Each structure stands twice: as structure tokens, then as C-alpha cells.
Length: 318
Image (tube, rainbow, N blue to C red; front, side):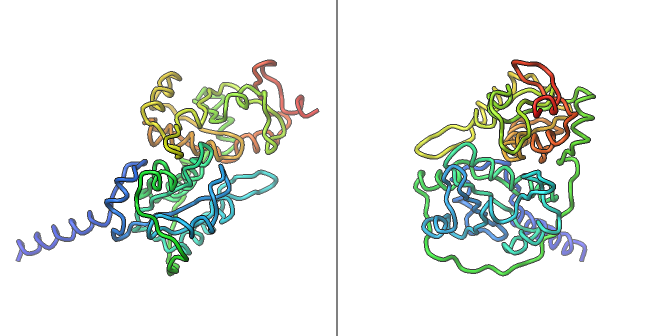
């Protein structure tokens, strides 16, 4: 009897392993092609107008077979509150969004952006971070996105996809992945690592986002531009892990130190978080979704500009 129980338990363990794919954070098209159609595998296409990535019409014209569509900019992955764009919605709203896509807690989710530009990669990174922030670890990003899938000659489907039934998805907020403004202020005072994921002209204060009330960066921050390790090949953009690790090494960041990634509205910051945490190997990285849009709401908060040094938000606004 005992041997039968052991055999049965072993069979259940093997079955469980078959459903849990445990992918690395970034997978190539070949990996996905070999597993396409597996039980509990969902390809989530998040193409949007970012970098001319497309929309539902583009999805229906050519998509990864069996994939589901959710427009990154329009479906509710981020929201505006109190004049600040790009914030994480409430857990309940995200549970509904994900459940209506037919994704449950047993699914492995492969997030596929358009693959048409470096800013577009942030779409996949932000959705990936959202799943992680909800406690769902079975998630990965398709390197090269849909454009890379097509460029490499893998099968595409077209036409209206079959409807999927809504299901229940339960999230559990992982607060360690989400930095509040108060936590960023405390991190700055404690000399924790702050990483500005924006292009260098934003970091230096030479360019200002319309989402922020003033230019500049958070004093003490270092710069890891979100796009520097994204390379174009055959019309698609891929994250070059080797180049990324070299860029991170140049910053000489302690891998165990608390680190916060930010940008203007939590989009490029998602790329920064993903690059630092999931590929770069830093152990304690959070993302400030309010980023400079929220930081600059208070006139008293400090900013650093390359040409002026440290000034207050109020000095620049006035």
C-alpha cells in the first residue's frame, strides 16, 4: 500500500511539474515555439500605439497562435490618480482585468509586446512587473516580441480569435516591489541606490516630460537608460543581456543593496526594474510607479540638474 502511495505521489509531482513551466524571466521565440499549446500556458499580446506597435486590428491580422490580446495603454494596466499618470491600479481592478482574459493562478504567462522599439519593451516589462507585484511568479517576457517572432519565421495566425471564458485570478500585493514617495525619500536619506531609467537628457535635466512639473532627477540617482541594451535585429528589438550586464557593471551597484528604479511615469522604470532585478541579478529592487510625475508634485522636494546642481521643485516651477 505504501509503495502505491509513493508512486501515486510521484505521478502527481510529475504532473504538477508539467503544468508549471518555471521559465526564465526572458525567453526566446524558439523556447515559446517548442511549448506553444501546452496546458496552462498563455501568450498575452500587449501591443499598443507605443513605437507604432499596433492595436487589436494588428493582432487579428497577424498574431502568435493561441495568444490573447490586451492593449497595454488602453485596457487598464495603469491608471491616473490625483493628477499622476502611470500608477498601479488597485489589486481588485487588476484581478478583474486578468481574470477576464481567462488567466488564472495556475497559468504560465508569456508577455509579448510588439517588439517594434525600445520604449515598447517597457509595455512587456510593466505587465510582467504587475504580475510579479500581484504575487504571480509564473511569468516571462518574449524577447523580440511579436515582431521578433515573425522575423524569425515562426507560425502566425490571423482572423478573429476564439473567445475565452473569464476565470478567477487572485492577487496578493507584494509591497516590496512597489516604492512609495515616502519610501523613496527615506531611501535617498539612507543613501540607498536610486536608478533613473530615463534617457540621459532627462536625467541631466535638459529635457522635461510633460507629466512632470519640473526637469531634473532625484538627487543621488545614477542613470541606466532603459534603451541602451535594446538592440535592433531584422526589424525587431531584443534585450541584449550581455550588454545590459556590462552597463550595470559600469555603475558598480552592490547587488544586495536596496535599489529603486524610476522614470517619468513608471513605464521606462519598469524596463529599468526588469533589467536590474530579473536580468542583472540585483537582489532587492523595487519600482517607483509615481516616478517624477509624483515626485515633482511637491514644491519642496529637491531635484538635481547637471547645469545647476540641487534646487527645489518650486524654484524651477516659479
